[in-house]
Image 1 (cartoon, rainbow, N blue to C red):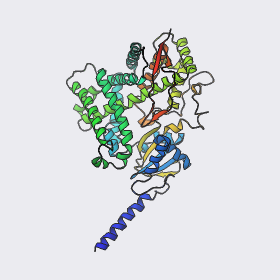
Image 2: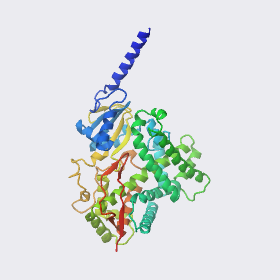
Image 3: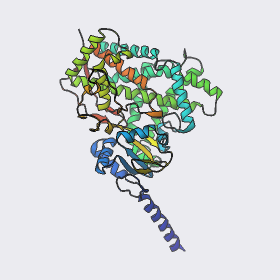
Image 4: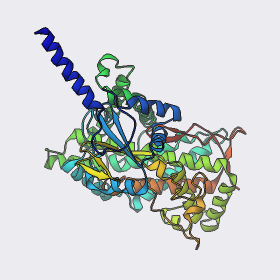
Length: 485
């Protein structure tokens, strides 16, 4: 009897292991799979070798000569799509609208499947539409927002003036300015300076913790019970609680009507009174988190790359300054000036191409069996979108490894927007904060260069090699801001 039981157990385990390494019919090419881990080890080794998961996966796709790379990470089927037609297809087609539901992504959303970034289905559609509509109702994306951005730009200029006797790290001032504009529309007020610094420190630490913990908690989430510190779980939980406390404090103030005016939190609390089934405080907290994450680091990182680029290339900086003075003089910049400052706008587009802030977008979840590039993609497969490779595709861009703002200016000297640029995504999941990001980047960059020359602080040019984790960021650097005469 014991022998029979052992034999049956052995057959079951062997069958499971065999099934786990057999690829589905017509699945995209990629590395071989091993029991329990799939090809996770291959992906981790390539990521380590090339400095980031994005670059590691890109090299794997080249190795297998494919525009759709097929993987299995732990128990999950994963594909990575390359090429403009495939990327556009995933961004716009409804079968790719889903989001994966796993422990790691729930941990990102304060432990629940909530918010609007990592949810899908009817509630996601309703709440995303509600969020966009009510942010606009309180002035987001309108002239009023532009005035808030100009106020923050002047605060940045004031900070530079007060600290102009020493080198300045742009990271000390840019993220907080973006956060203040965003929080004004979410919570009706700017954030106290000490609280703002705490929040930004939390987001930076949280981003690093997620980068560190990703492979552990995605592949073997149960490891948190045995290695809570080593896996990063304890740190992420602690950071989540601190961020949750900050957002809860803002909601509490609104419940007491302690914030003047109207804002998104007031709108959502009012909706809770009408519809308690899907409108909850947990959902409100997570949407607030989604908005803060989406707006703070990505926008400021573009600006940091822009300042780094003109620091390293004084010829480009002088050309931008000459255009600003010729077109605007000393007039305060606004978003409508972007069409007149052709070279400056082309420069900022090139920054977003050359330093793709989110080189590996997603993840998406396939809602039904579907085909892409001739391959069969099973339902529930996770999809990653290699926007970074698209921005360097030699079939689309002439000399893509060169930094050339002129590629965005046509033969008539008019700015042209490329159809192959996806800094904010595309389709129904396009970033809802793109109007803030574009306006903030343009107005702040022009305002700084209008008044200050960006110069090297120690005689050594900082590297332009980015640090690539969940998002791309420049390595820390400092600037001497020299007041223009």
